[in-house]
Length: 323
Ligand code: F6P
Image (cartoon, helix red, strand yellow):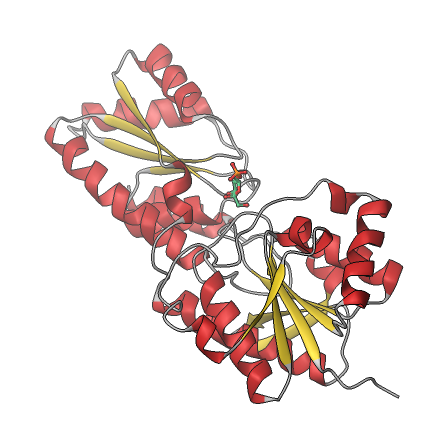
């Protein structure tokens, strides 16, 4: 018979992402609604091992829906990667009578939750929180929309100076081994080219495009480079070496992780947080929640960790057509 959930724990782990707070709020308030207690676990898996936790009530998550980052703090834990660390985490869970966990984070978080669940049987539900949008089983991860918008805002500003001074800008965006932010920021920002890890790029072709553009009178270029491809500085050097044209480099870095979440991220976080609690109540285990085609989608936690293959060829072609 399935055990009644009386007390759940929630943690954020890995890189923070805008909208994590909206998810925490939704999880805590859903738990309270169903007469469960919600433990906020601080600093991800490390905080779980160190028993850094407190009960969160309805009001303790007031006014956080609009805030970036995570009130629970986050990080990556080397200890949790060891069997001894996970044993310690299990002891903490038992001691505190926690019946299930909601894990908000990216693929590393899911991987940790999956192995922990297999070893100790603690019910775990994953909620995808990552700016990279690289988790299988969901069209979007919480934070990816905000990150694209943050990058876009920067690109719009770069465009002002790029066109005024007729320069080539290479803009590096985050995403680890995913090109999601790069391709979407490039499309929405009207960039002239984009280099992403999912697709081979041809440096000679890029340089030739720039030179030909110059001959037609197109003097300013914005090239978006996903961090998983190369350092923007290296791409800029190759362009200058080949074309003898001046370049400028901007690395957007961690600003892409901050800021108030967009409506889309808040909505997604709110829906998925509530769904995670509902799955725990139903006695489901080792699942990850997501949305596919705007409908809630549930997959195995172990399945969700694998990177999804993004269909990017048509989007890259579109950028080329429009340049
Ligand atoms: O996974 C989120 C992410 O922001 C990646 O896009 C990036 O590669 C990485 O985290 C940066 O990690 P850190 O904050 O540890 O430098």
